[in-house]
Length: 269
Image 1 (cartoon, rainbow, N blue to C red):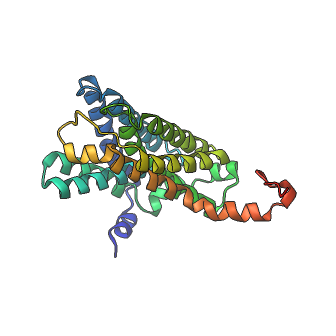
Image 2: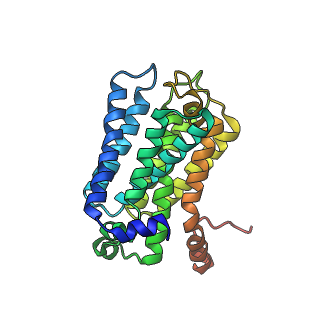
Image 3: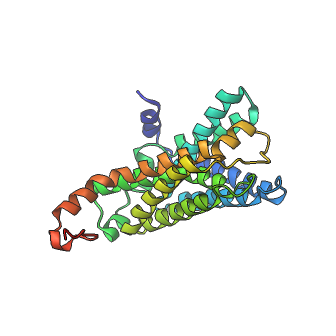
């Protein structure tokens, strides 16, 4: 039996939520403290990262239906970054704690019983008239978009030599944040904004080459995530993967529309 299946069979939902909140609060406090006396140019990054974890903490604590998705997305991103950093740099206790705490959040919020506390609530499904398949697509979207946020933040707000790529980074970050907020409000434009953010990030990967400066000691992984070869590519893949579950329904809806009512209809003249 898989670990997640065993964890789902254990139960102890309240206790697991408490452990996940404890780990999330650790990152809220750490990033807030780092923002007080950061290396030159890194204050906006730490403030924004602290804000992400505060939102995830509140969403999980308040049992908002999307809370588990956002926290799991951030946890997945942090786990992968910690693992890649350990492979690149070798064993370092700080990186092990960083990745391990994110993995702990991911494990504590996994399983069907935890889903019953959040996305399986009937109130929000009745309010937005969403079925099981729609909820599954929304879950994949929110987790992938949330996992892209740390890379977008470091890419957009991190210090760099020159101004190369700053505009692309800002546009992609704003579109991604707006798209996530809009999609959680069940607005179609949120999906479109996220898709455009992924395209902008992919364009930045090919055109811009910003170089971060003033890394906080974990030079290789931090720089890799924030520079064009790392942050843009990673964010672009996650954002485009986030909107991929909606590609099929969008195409089917488009084909079902009468030709005269389709938006952006091209003239044959």
